Length: 315
Image (cartoon, rainbow, N blue to C red; front, side):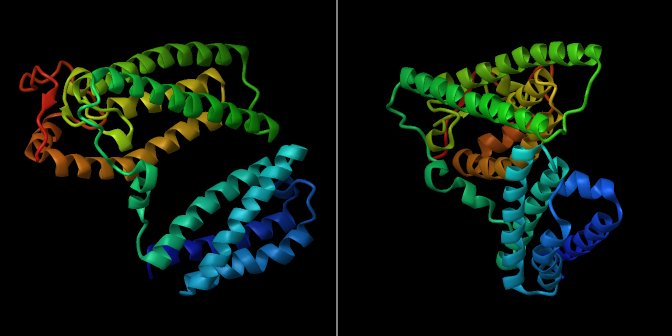
């Protein structure tokens, strides 16, 4: 049995146990369904979630498609319901997890693997920047990217998540001292992480003849600035910024959002990016990767690290 089918088997059992809890424990029913009529919900959910998951575990691809689609629909409907009524916030979180799990399991059942390479298609396809564009254009492009991405991923989305946390009644009441400590720690961490991110972006655009965006990647291997002590300083900065914003907002959901993003980046994006770097820069990148760690900075910088920031690409 594949991992996808195993997941659907677990989901079927978990769904059945949840319905037993809904019928026997008022607290579970209130937290996950609110004032929704459990009988009406069960009429649709038991066959489309519990039974369909069991059929998917048995090898039915059609059932896998049905239960994944139904799970996503329930997640969206519960999110709307919880936002409108302030009920069933815990149910939304459960269904978010179930939707992600079902989607991954569906890919394993239908394709036999998770097609992570789809992330680097279309506008996100790996392409090097125009080497003749000039340093000023690369710097301006990087500044624009920082403004857009930081505004979205460190501004808009965290504010939406924090608002949902409050609206869904999932925000715990914290003592004033804890709130003050979290806010001060978050502010300090945000400044430090942002400085690291800006320094990394500056090295990328001025030394690499490109930008951090996959569609306009550097033409040269950057091993200057923060890249001398850690291979992924921009990712490290982004994760720390996300956690810092969560502390500033005293939102545990924003902190989880940042940590979940780190897992996705490490498990999905990083292997694709490093495979591209290995293809383009060959032995130069392999020597660099063997000397400088991915996540944990080396300080002081290893004596063998080059003083300059550029290694010519393999043509």
